[in-house]
Length: 247
Image (cartoon, rainbow, N blue to C red; front, side, top):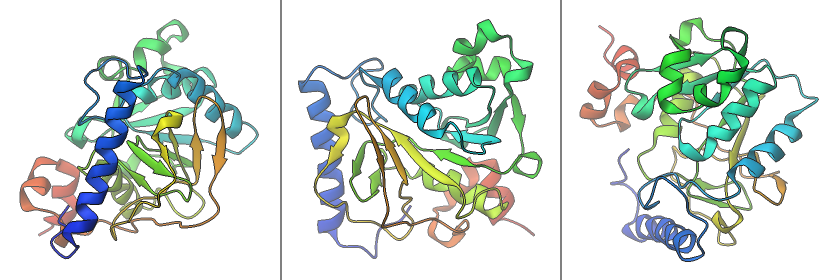
């Protein structure tokens, strides 16, 4: 997304926070495959524990469907949701093929682990157009950096915001939707992340050691802002073409 109207200082600060966290994960020896973590939603030791805390925190809430990003650190989240019998939707990498439905009732239980991987979701899932999808009770985003007020940074390409925007356009998310993320404790920073107008903040943060509910600074993309998107991005993503290039 374009940042021409925002100061160079803010852009550099956001990128500096990303570099600081990527470096720290590598230096402390908690980064795991795929490596290096720079330029990625970083996978980390303890991702399964963070996933377990998140799923346990969500138990008891009425959850029919969960949307999950496709990155490696959230694979344990996808597996555990399937084990709990929860229907999940996963974005294909770069939203290039839209969204995929993973229905635990249509996947062999001994294949949940494989189905939770990127290659496995194409084998066991089915492509789902937003017009056919269920309302999303929980939206799980991958993160590079998160602050205590719910501000988050992804790897800098805006895909979580685009995914949420597309779902919002089709009325599949609203203020009832919980936005959550799983991260390593080292990804949680004391400094308040400066937000861009299109940024998505989180309500719930799960780490290997703790759960944090955020009570302030809620920001949600309400629809797809086609005017802010480079035309090449629109042409690369079929769902954006459908939304932005209507005749």
